[in-house]
Every structure is written in C-alpha cells, then in structure tokens.
Amino acid sequence: MGVRSDVAIAVKKETFAALSVRSQLMVRENFEEVEKDDEGILFHCNDIKWYTGSDSDIIRLYGELYELDDDSYLIIQACHDYPETTDGDIGGWHDNPWEVFRNVCVSIDWCV
Picture 1 (cartoon, rainbow, N blue to C red):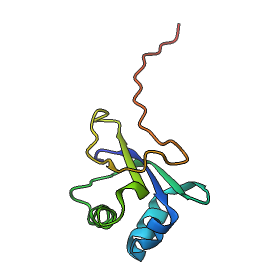
Picture 2 (picture 1 turned 180 degrees about the vertical axis):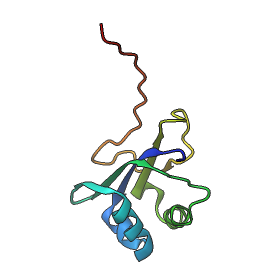
Picture 3 (picture 1 turned 90 degrees about the vertical axis):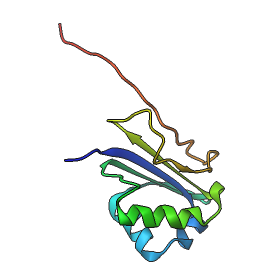
C-alpha cells in the first residue's frame, strides 16, 4: 500500500534536457506531460509513491536538480495523508507559466 501523493514538476526545457537519460525516462514513464510551451514542460502524476528519502530514482532526480539552477524547475508534492508537509517540494521556478501551487481542501458532504 504505502503513502501516495500527487506530484507536479514544472521544468524549463534546457533543465530537463540537462538531466540524465535515466531521470528523464523515470519522469516520462511515471508522469503525464500536461502542457508544454516555449519555456518549459509541466508534468503531473496522481497517487504516486513519492519517497524522496528512500527511492533511488527520486533521490537521483533531486540530486541532479540540486546541481542545476534553482529557478529553472519546481516540484510540488501534495500528500493526502500529510497535507501540511512541504518535504518533497524543491526548486524556485514559482513564476512558471502554469502557476503551479498546492491546494489543500477538506470538506464534508452528505445525502439527504
């Protein structure tokens, strides 16, 4: 089972191209390419086991990104079990074309 998250990756084209083939492949295999423009690419995935401290592919991706320009990418992890955590968030490309942000919402519904 495990904890699952929704994850968005906004990345400039040149930054994505600078990643290793293995990291690019991991992103393309696990994420949907939502949008692409002249500046970058937006990837999104629902319900992924996004273990930043124990999954070797994710650790590699984060390590490669840390070595690049912080303002050229943004990863946001929205965890349903831990909505207040920002542990999986990295990058500084907050002015990305898609204005990616975390939205936490709790509601109660019922049928009458």
